[in-house]
Image 1 (cartoon, one colour):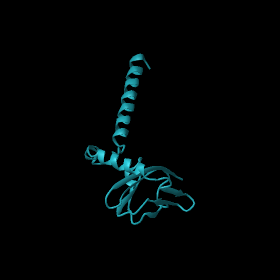
Image 2: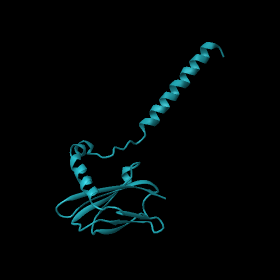
Image 3: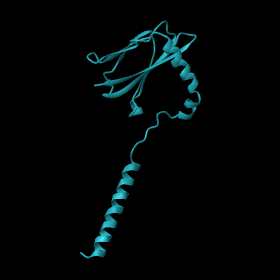
Image 4: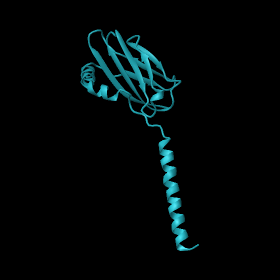
Length: 140
């Protein structure tokens, strides 16, 4: 093979590699954290206020993960009129789970959750004031 053929082959292989990478990258799924990201960020001060009110409460031991039983025990302080528990999976939002809060003490099963990194987010209200708490969890 002469120099001209080698250079042409090199360019063809390089162009094929770049074309393959572009094709592969276009087929990858990219998740946003939320679909309504902009609207949520505009109202973020409300979230900051809820987290500050929660910090004033005694929220130690709010979440207790029991891997042997495959469950999370959520113990909210005080009476609860409404709320929601969100099991948030940062790597795949299709696996997110939302559970309504029925009582100040609630058990959440992790049997159907995929192993890996999760965040537990709880928003609740005592009827007058809203609260928010979040904790990281690694499920095996």
